Length: 344
Ligand code: TXA
Ligand code: MG
Image 1 (tube, rainbow, N blue to C red):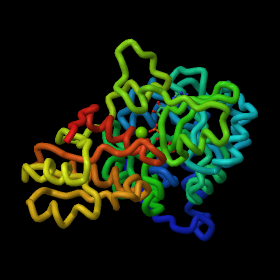
Image 2: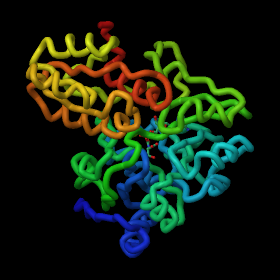
Image 3: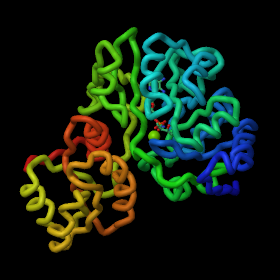
Image 4: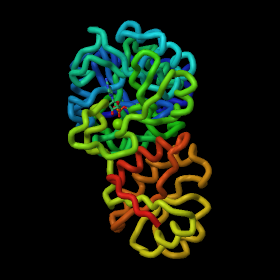
């Protein structure tokens, strides 16, 4: 299939392009679109054929459910059983990078939810995403717009690289803002379980929910016997081509260990560039040490770039802190490293 790439920087001025992409969604086609977290691979969430096409384009197992994207939080009423806590969270965090798992209604086919009785609902804040969903008039099912096993795309170029020829349209809205996928929570009355950390932090959720539990799989390897709260937890996650090792230690110990071997790639902080480049390692800077937001923004682009360096035998990165946005970085990196941590 020929993929049309459309640059959209102003969805209001470019309403005609948005309408064209929305028509493609309505007739069962696939449209890649930017969100404030990462790019999504969208299709009509009420159409089981569109869901099948999404799984095929991504090469994703069809029991790993999709998030449905709505134009306004109250639109969830048509597709899910909401609750007072859903609306409390919506009031504070929607539109925005939060996904809530709710009991599903029959309007959403089981092929979208991987056979589950629940559905993941998200209302993105990105103007292009919002305009597309509103124009389509249907909820848009969208996993991240990468081939299965690759990092989520934070630039249109990443999505083009993975999905050119596999989708009808790619809307290029420039860099995704946050750079890691949305926070996912499962609700039980006024309590929540954090299934995937993201831009909406644990502390922020605690301000709204009575109690917030963190699913063990967020930070630890899942035991064989453990039941996956989210099917995404049990799948082999993205891992870079060269094995990734997370170094747990102070700045000096990191520099000494990381620079010992010139055949390594290092995901480093900006302030380490000078010291490390003098020792011949290949560097992938991800932001300043204290700027977790910048690190979240650059992480996936850095990992994609590292995968292009076929000469690298090994990758090193800092073990991120677990506070604030750090927990989202920790979760993505610990899985990419298959839980390999070296105390230095
Ligand atoms: O930021 C995001 O959430 C992006 C953008 C495009 O919105 N989307 C995204 O989708 O990251 P995806 O499919 O790559 O990740 C969705 C995760 C998967 O791990 C899936 O298992 C989980 O959400 N999930 C979806 N529906 C679920 C459900 N009903 N119960 C539990 N987990 C669910
Ligand atoms: Mg994904």
